[in-house]
Length: 391
Ligand SMILES: *Cc1c(COP(=O)(O)O)cnc(C)c1O
Image (tube, rainbow, N blue to C red; front, side, top):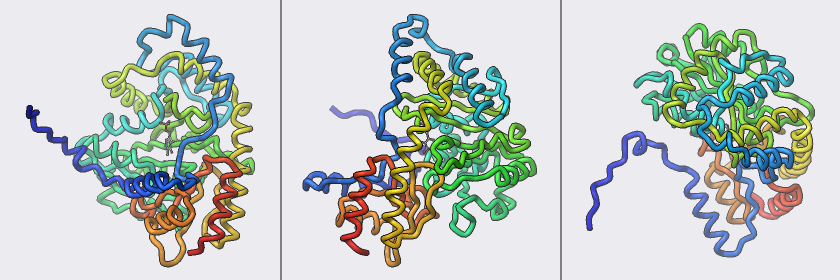
């Protein structure tokens, strides 16, 4: 029996090559050989969701009122909890009715937002290296992603002055991400103010991704984009409960900011999905209302891990900035290596999986990313193995 010819749509055919495929293959082979792999490649917390959140979910799931369709923009009680959290955490006031939308994980909102504002040929400015969803969602909406390289000489922040005038003219949307995956760099309110001035001059909507705002060290709390004067005039901020509360599997996040931008995103959502399960939103309320009680302990664990890895890597002479936030270390590859060859070297000689920096965009070439999503004992073991291999 022969089927109909299957032709994939251009938006799929033109997806960038999956640069992690080669490393996945090598990892499978190492596992098959019986190598005890230490995986520092994963951007997913290894620890369970805190018990009070799970318990609230257990109760909520039995309530028949949650068994029906939710509203696609989210329960008002969840959005009110978001507004309360913004007030306490950032001293920013937002209207839960018009300036907050519940998301099925922040990736969902990031993936959908260009569809609300981008017409074919419009430019979307994306940080690179960066979360692959930014350029892909731009292209799915028919837009053209323009990379803003994150370079060491600029403190790994986008250089707004380097954006060519004709690109700025066609730009309608800019993605930003602080604290940053993969570089771990935190942008401050001064930088956000420059972004706001740029956005106002060039009529660009700013979409700031703050998924790691609560994973920080040494008491250095990252700022919200919305703390900067005028931010509410130009854009929105994405947040996620995934990293803050070890809830990656639950799919719960939100966007906050300028009402018309939230309304555009909500309009796309109401035509594409029917919102997040209300029981998950109930659990999310428990998480947000806990403020620091559930997160402080998590931060302490990551900080211990960070200190073990950073001290070990420094001793080995590797070049990197100690992360002040996120659970990533962004490391320069030694002389004579590329991102791919150093990743391969660490896997073959030490059984350590890392992520090649060029997988996040070509300006990431020359770097690898290590994640702190494994125990401090395993991180110490990784450092020990690295001492023996050389490069
Ligand atoms: C993990 C991550 C997110 C969060 O994704 P969710 O869909 O909320 O789980 C968003 N942005 C970046 C850069 C991330 O690394």
